[in-house]
Length: 158
Image (cartoon, rainbow, N blue to C red):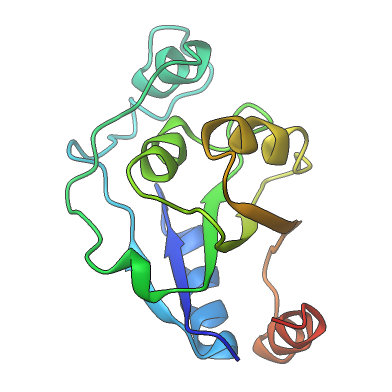
């Protein structure tokens, strides 16, 4: 098996729990994509058209700054990237992450948590930012037991 990384953004902690379980199931290293400026509850209020997250998601060129740089991306062959679904796609900070590194030839597996939305156009949205990566699949992983995560990872034949 190739060397794997689980990189994730979690605004409320839900995606973090899934990412930690997935890293264990995939025998992968873990990296949290932290925003330079943490999101407050008001920032995440999707019903407020002036909230930070709403403004970011309305602007396709938005690239929120990331607090810490990942060192050694070249050491990974497989990168799982996790996030909550916002406005039927990945949060803008995921675009920042993807555009910050060279993912050429790497296998990218997207996973998301969602309160009810599907993965939607997320893969196409992110392929546009990172065209040289090999996007394998994308899946919503809500409250998956570790055994189910392990079966899913094994089914990917990485």
